Image 1 (cartoon, each protein chain N blue to C red):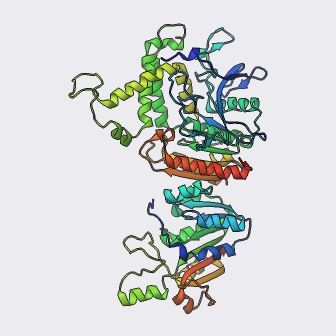
Image 2: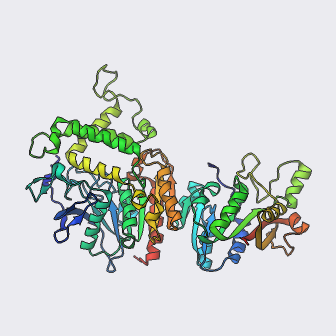
Image 3: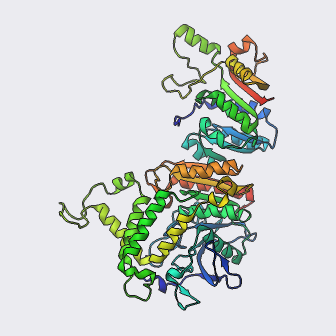
Length: 211
Length: 381
């Protein structure tokens, strides 16, 4: 079982939280997979009045969540989603956790089994800063969002925006909504399918369903 | 000075005099006493009552001086004004279980049919029976629904049984360091204990109450064996290592050379003053028989079908009596039943006993859970 802590970006880059909240219908049932210390879950409960549940790997994170009154179970995205019933949630969220899973495609399948929709956010490895790092410095990229050196990072399956959409195609998933955020934290107007988005996009947020 | 349990004034209520309590073994029991302690005040809506379920060798004195030992209540760390189970806010009820020996009817009490102590004529009881008896106490206290039912070890089994058997009478449940069924290994340990009791010549087929000699040696050995399972290697090592007791050299004999031996002997001897050997047999049996999934066609999640009860489960990383994996089985079944459940494995080297000790992570978890549950029940004070 993966006992590593999951990648925790700095708070000031969590622009994805509000964007995820914007995608969610009020009063829906939400499962936040890899919910860390529960801040997104608490935000969704406060602003959208959702019935929120969480899964988190780290004892520290779960303790904070439960001590703050959130319904969170200590568990692993790779192995524990199987225990959840089909369609038990309106939304299954995987925020900044996909790249730390062992089998991202299996996790995506599971998200869309337990949730009618899945909302997935992840850092785009094709972002120009990453390309610059690798192309010019010849080093594994480190940015403000990816601030851990390669030997310490729990991230094991980085992907680019294009890789992700290709996987969605391959799995027959429907991209219902997409929001791409640049390095400055601004939402981009470009379509997620364009090369500009793949070059300048830093954070990607997708809402998926299975048609 | 310790008193014998027979001579202690205990708060209790006679139940089952109009309707006998049906038991899982097929018989029923009428006119049974339920002994209990309460702490705090029941609010006008009767919505702040918490039932504390004690473990195998516990009793109702969860937060008050145990009359036999004179020691503090077994959960004093948890219960009290401003504590996790805040007596300024909640009304805490802790009863002695059916089959126990601290005032609730058990094998040492008089069988009204014979005028003699029950001894082995006491019916075999189960966790389900214990909970059914507690439900009668709940009726007597005129509490429609416990705000929470909380317990560790066998107390956790009762909390699970409560949530399964009486979901509408149990707003939330906190099963700690327990399992949905007693494992083969645990049954094996219990059997060692029971055989120790029954091998004591003073046990006399369970009919020792009129005798001067009680099966204290057997019961002490049973307690010693059980006590080892409550600790962890790390906790034992930290506490005692291989340190010698009151001596500099080995005696090359069978005295208690090591501190750990001396400690276990103390635990064993101390126990026989406050516990009845037959009660030990009956209560260990009740735990052995516990299998919540089997009671529901082999499906644990069926035990919690459509439950509205909110759950918070806690396990301890060094607990090898009720390991985290068994606590997780409960959590997975609750998830499958779409229950509202939280689960934390607390990192500790204190073993199974961690639920009785000062364990800050446990306290924070339970406190946070109760606070949010209180909010959803509209408990304001």
